[in-house]
Length: 261
Image (cartoon, rainbow, N blue to C red; front, side, top):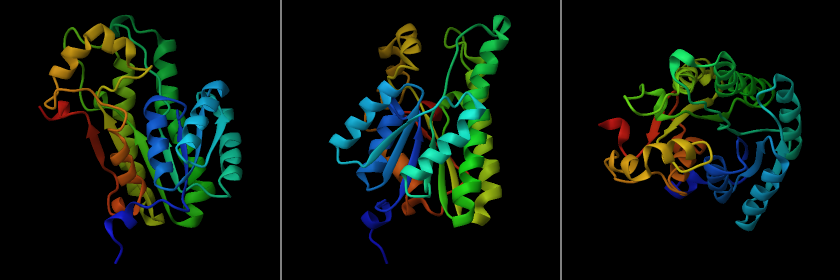
């Protein structure tokens, strides 16, 4: 029987983290790498990726960077090709973190903005999960897929708060995509789960946090704080490792209790 520490050990495992050059993606890449996984991070900008890899390597993580625009379907297969090559021919863990948002009143919401958000937040995740599943996880009958949703996918927005109808819709779709894929791919030994973060300071959330007020947002959480630089590490480690091998199709809110009240 393995110890709890051994269950969390990711030595010999490989991971692909999208949107991994900063913020929550980099935090999760660090968590997986610190547990022993070899990590590929991807995002659109090579300069950001180079900085992320430097941070990962400073922390003892074997890391590689691959620039790709996941909003473009033609980028998916070349990314998977390059990741498989860098990681030794297989991807054990896929973290679908890349995403976009756009704020506007629903009655005036631009169709272009709706399509951009839905394309990156839902369609690209389906395509990348499908490619990684077919080319690595299903043949090996093992894998972990971790989709980064949001508490915005669990509810709407109250008066005077965010006007992000496409973002909320996309994250709700991602949550049920997680359940549906878990139901189909369980027979292949693939676990599919989702994390639903609350407010974490990041480039994506900076505008909303500034508009709504950091103190006000923190006060709305039972734990009276926003998410921090280590607050997703344990959750992603659970879903990525054998510590969570009997968990699939689930959504874990990491939000200081906001969604509970």
